[in-house]
Image (cartoon, rainbow, N blue to C red; front, side, top):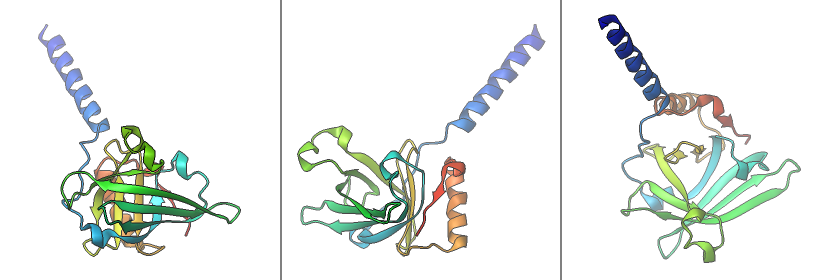
Length: 180
């Protein structure tokens, strides 16, 4: 009977370890963000592929502009496979304090902004102290972007970010490098 109990305990322990290895810890953000400093152009270096960027073939960027009401205008641009520019204009708002790294974005019309489902989480999970690169995701880790102030990111910096992302529970196999 003791062997059976010990074997059952061992199996339960291994199952618990396996389950915890598959479920990453809650996603942490950076401590704070200086929103005015964050404004400007960011170039997409890599991302998790997603349905709303399927038409983007190259030159993906985001332009952030601080508005008088404290919200942030977001202009996402990319070139399609036929060389035409595609744009999406949206808004972002901070959640919580003035230096919160947790934002929500919407690309739906303003008249729909009262509907919670039109807002998506935009969490800054890693940020260069000089604001030269940033990593953005959301609590479920379904979306991920690595952005830079320049169209290319130094290879060592990129590899370092991949190591940090792996430690945070991101699937590196899903990351797709962007075409400048």
